Image (tube, rainbow over all chains, first blue to last red; front, top):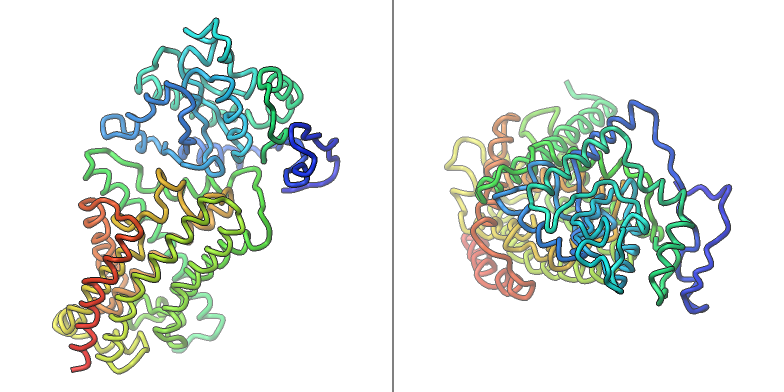
Amino acid sequence: MFEKKDRPVPLANEGLVPEERGLFCDAAPREYAPANKVVEDFWNWARAQSLWILGFGTGCGAIELRPLMTSRYDMYRYGIQPRPTPRQSSVFVIGGYASVKTLKRIVRSYEQMMGPKFVVALGSCTINGGMYWDSYNTIKRIDQYIPVDVYITGCMPRPEALLAGFQELKRIIRAGRAEGQNAYARDFGWYKANQKKVIKDWNMPDYNW
Amino acid sequence: MEPTVLGRIGYALVSLFVITNYGLLLIGSMARISAKVQGRVGQPVWQPYLDIIKSTAKRNAISHGIMFYLGPVFRLAGGVGTYMFIPAVYGSVLFRNFSDSGDLLLVMYFIFFGQLGMALGASEGGHPYSAIGVSRGLSQMTAFEVPFALSVIAVAVQYGTLDITAIVAAQQGGFAHWTLATNPLAVIAAMIAFLGMSMHNPFSVVIAPQEIPIGPPTEYQSNLLGMLQTNRAIFNGAKLVLYMNLFFGGATNILVMVVKTFLIYFINIFVGQAFPRFRTDQSIRFFLGVPTLVGIAGVIIAAI
């Protein structure tokens, strides 16, 4: 699981003060090859049936997540449930517009999740900025900063649309196409450069384990 | 015919396999019953299996040191150890486990051993919420241990033994011989302690998801989380079987065991759906109040 060979150059963690650098991990993420076909299909089936959402309202769209827990929409019957810590959850829901300040937290939380991890971005704001298209302080396209598996359009998307989006995510996972974690590791330099371009006060490690 | 040592280990593994699956299905079905109370459809009964497979199938995991690994191991050892020294079905060779070797004190030790191991492991994770969850869990545990210990003392005094098999044997012969009929006060104290032990509402503040993200297991992920989830099933099953043996006459076949333990566990859901969550200080005051007095009364009745 923790192979040390062919380890790339350690990350600089330049955002941290020198005495804190030793406290954080300096290894870049790496790609994980899927297991053989039969095993991976079985795992993907289980992953699709047990989607744990990171309970972090990243934008105003998160208000549409709440009704999913109620008896009217009841996401539990699809195996979807909120999980309060990024360590245990597998789906990160970007709830609408992301300001630069929130993006920092989004990146931290996303990197702390254990793979395979999936991202559902809801609302027009995550796709092209939506009604904040000319704002100085929101980012326009979330997939320039973290890999996104499913977009749900609308301003706001209704809870039904969210459920439909989760069903779509399940289909993608079952087909073995939800490899966002590997995409992030492969294009780590590109994602990191994009993040650092907008987050001016970068005072965290380059990769938050 | 008395089985050999290897045969007994084999039987114990079969018994463990059965209780694990039973525990998982029990958790799943109780979640579904809670959902029905809330007017929802609820998750499938087999959802705990999917969650465990999913957790185990995670591709990467992080470590916070050796004690972090040992936490879930201790927890699992506590769960398995508790179950291994209780006869699941009275008179059955297959389900008697190693109950002729331990006694009630050993089982009680195992119940708390897992929690302490988990406390050490979770603290190693370094997350502040883990520490808060651990402190809440341990203080609540100290509180509900009082009525539980009192009821165990009452049972030990009443039957004059700490051997669980002997306690079950003394309760055979119909409802009138159960501890529930002969010493109801001890059973009431023990059942209230059981509510605290299983950490459902109103005593769920230890692992309150919205308040302190899931408490002690905050930093646990991947296969370590899968281990904790498996242990939850085993530990629940073990505690239910223990309660059935001590207070509800034990079971002479697997069907009676399933029905009785289901009903005992159902009390949790019944209370949990009706009452909101206590804060830690409230639950400590609660456990040290009426349930403790009831437990003392139970001991006095048993002694007379």
